[in-house]
Image (cartoon, rainbow, N blue to C red; front, top):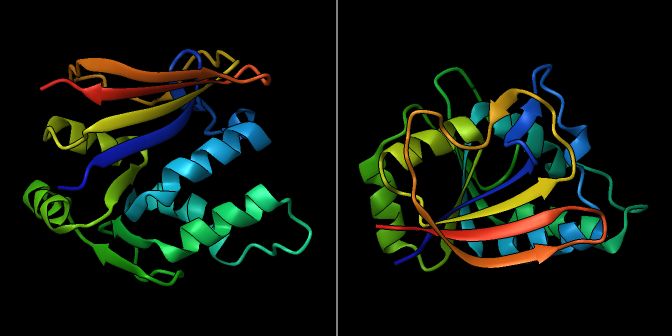
Length: 185
């Protein structure tokens, strides 16, 4: 059975975007990006909410000629993965290998996990909150940026208790910290 993983970059105080919706403070350096690439390489299908998809779809057409190799690698990984966008308002997608689902159906995600040969990734804190509530997320990969933003969009749902077991950690020269947890059952 495939795992459903939640990978996010967040502030040290637990936000993926500040109160103004900004997240440029979480831009990964080469070392962080390289680890993200390695984790994303295992994912065959990404599940996104509309907002997260609208941020990440830039990777579909980003000019890569003058980009460093780790950026080009991420674009290739993103482009080659299947993507499911959960949205009631998005009319069409603008990336290959992408389909829209109007509602998040936990049973359909369980079926995807059971039938997939590769892991699934979930992106976006609002969609991840639904998956946490349904008990679907198997592992979290958090990259904590060395900044406290004081408020904004939380990385974890506020109304769900999730017990985690630390599996791995890594400190980067840039001040980022990587934490890999498995959800306890």
